[in-house]
Length: 182
Image (tube, rainbow, N blue to C red; front, side):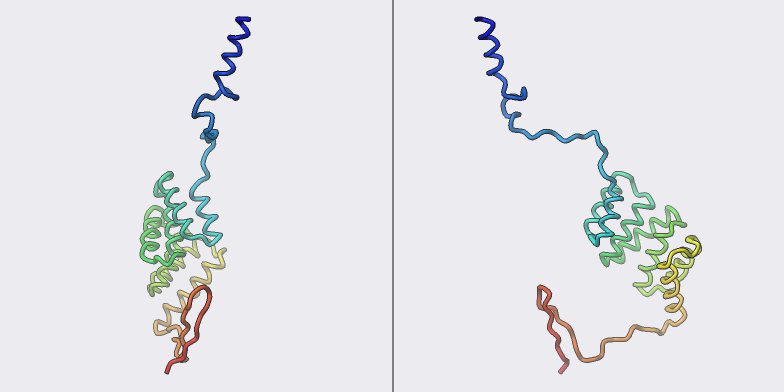
């Protein structure tokens, strides 16, 4: 009888599963044995999906874990380029090229930044180097080089301006208003 009372007392003291008190309501812990997904890989996937701000954050996480490698710096420059932050993109891409002057993606993307800022001569040189290092396989680099050659050989070329007397004004949530000049 005494043994039965001791066994019942032991069972009543511990809730099911052997947990006690407040721990009984806690969710199970996270398995920390597995490696986290690489921030650079996540950033590349986000860039492909058009999520440039999130990609930039993933690339910064990659920089924190990997360090400022040529891959990370080039990726940061590419994300900033897609966000229209040309100054930051140029800075990151130049740093990437300081680390490895033969890194084709950084050469191409820096050339794109320079084309956007009107530095056609330097852009042409960068595209030429990227094209040579890539052995002419990339259609995008070939097209960028062609455009840079056109722009650098014809410095007076300008995109046609909108002189039709109309302007488009955004009114919110996908609504636009077409206004004519008086």
